[in-house]
Length: 373
Ligand code: MRU
Image (cartoon, rainbow, N blue to C red; front, side):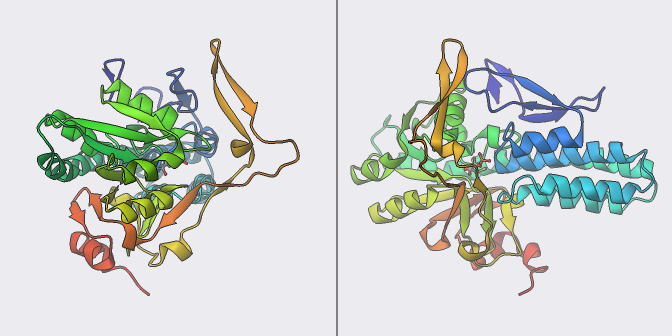
């Protein structure tokens, strides 16, 4: 997508040096900076400390990290063991977004299919590129399918009146390689000439909505308004939200959706007010091994300091201030799970389906051939 008019991806590999380049998301929206990652350790740190974040972006960055892992292992005595250790290190960085494990496992399988080390190295580079390209294309397709939902709502409104879409956290292009999941239908609607306005949940504690989604939408010229996290229910009661679209970090094969903390409350409010609640995801975000997401999706707990403090921009620099009394404890559950029954539909690269095992099976029958239990 465009940054000051120039197209960017969130992560890519420098052809000459082999280094990985990422947009450092910690500094947005105040500073746009590209970071260079040259080692697996640097990639692991970038994911753990959220220089990059968002399910698809984490997956693609880890995929490129595995290409670095292969390069690092090239000189090691036991190539496979060295790569397996790097894989474990990358997987351990963040527990909820399943794209991470999916990308690392795909890299391991690609390398395992090769005989010589030189072939494994080439396979790792090619697979990283394929994962990144696929992520971008799948998100583009999500936009194409999701556009129809926005169009149907627009058709019920007086001509020229904007469709009001609420989103939580950042499931925009920064959370992927390009286009985004929840935002892709919004960009597609805009391109199709449908007026849209986005309510952007600020998304405490790290404010991915206020900082990242608002910046992204602003860069693309999409009208939007940042709201405090607890505002959505009120807006829905007053008829000021036509549609909710969120992303997800992991979705069970029965359609339970793990997403940034607070998503579940928006889904409850949406159900109470008859507002459609859609979740947009590429198939790399399904966890085919989990049936009951509420029970079995691991929820990342981050440091309480992210709740106890807030950071913002003042006189040319970033500043962190304390919000809660010294001595008060803060806990920081990073995600929650919205049960499938509250989800109106899933928007995937293959089309839209009901959030149920039957609905998902209809779009991805081959994935269920491998499911046991
Ligand atoms: O903790 P983050 O920023 O990596 O969380 C991910 C998210 O931004 C959201 O949960 C998002 O809606 C889904 S990621 C496509």
